[in-house]
Image (cartoon, rainbow, N blue to C red; front, side, top):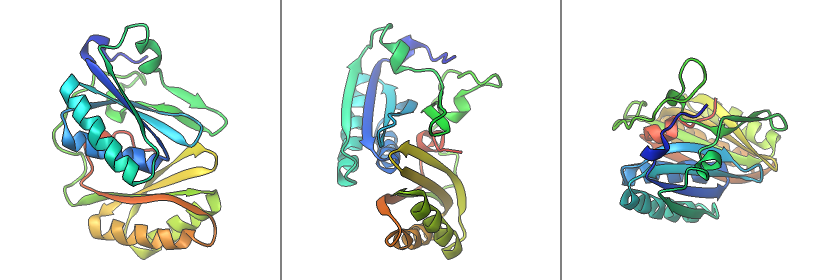
Length: 223
């Protein structure tokens, strides 16, 4: 059960995008721009994902403005909304329980990883200033429509540079994202190679490299 104290949430911000990559890039920007915390992410099963953050009113407002700007540049078609002191009844669905979708065989409500205890229940969220990844590390995202395209892209990317595959995320509609990690130069080279490999087999939805990702992003990465 999600134990996050509703009284601690203050103002909640929601940013929903088409595509996983714009959402993660927006979250990184939001958490680098203002003192906010990530509550959870929820896949909408229609090519998109909703990132939920919380903090004081001014910080959430600043964060959403930064997030929507970069998501728009990435053509993620972002939708944002800020809720001031959300109603306790509304929080029952906004601050949702972990949920597994058997159709796509993965969780659709993602809680920050280290906010879960050994029983699979979430613990109160604590803010950390430094990323859990080393300062010279980066995350790379390759998002396509179609499995063949993304599998070919990730094989090409891994052969092009020394990177590690973190996991993949499915949003329905054939949207699949594979996430890489490594040093900035390696991830950049791998993502560039992967982009080129997509062209003949499918549609490249998005690709991006995040240098020194924040904890907010790292905690929501797929396995």
